[in-house]
Image 1 (spheres, helix red, strand yellow):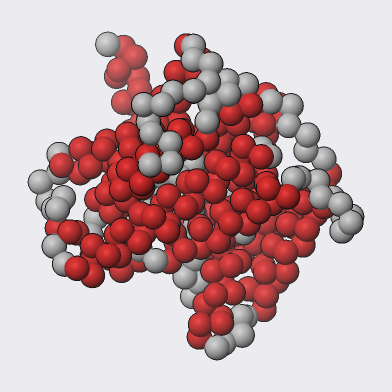
Image 2 (cartoon, helix red, strand yellow):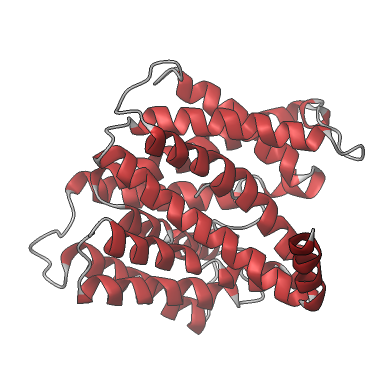
Length: 322
């Protein structure tokens, strides 16, 4: 009883802005941790990445739709009423949700969680370049600087400064860059849907559809790997805390501090993935890796604070990926 009143008292002492900061950082850390947990499950427990993607999408999608169903003001089936919305949702589910999930975990499988997360953060620079080409308008100085930093950071991360060698495998580089492209598509394509329908509904249906599609690649009932208490707990954390819990926490944080500040705090994600990977899994991460990481994170910060930027980070209201 004392602990209950104590916790409530502490929460009342924290301002709404403080709560927003805590929730946004907590969500980002959960996403970073989930990638590292995925790396551990692939490398130590020999789980199949395809199976994890399938199960995570299916369960998370069902849970989000169940959450939406509890709110009377949300129309769960409304997004299916018009042909345009149906096609847009299916395209987002396969080309966005499934693609970004699959490529992210594939990158982890062939490298590590830190590298996968950082490479995926190239998405903002790709979006900026796409918008400039689409509008036939040169990026402003800040955006040009961000693109240069992103390219340089990636170069250092994958070559350690030597263009003749790769510090990661060709497969990891391919899936990592593909993950950034998938993130760019994922961030732009569903914007009309999100303006029209509740994000929980859009994400819930997208995850469920993507999970069903991924089930044709690896059915959820085809278990592989070494299953014990640790395996079960880590999989449960990835599905419940790093998906449903983190998504809800991030949505609430946006209400308290706004999307821009929440997006900037999302930069905690790759840092948490890198720090946990280095300290727990002994992932090799040298000077060039840290410099490249810093450059890519600065890219995200520069583009996030641009008022005219259309970039929606991977921890925006449409993200439960990490």
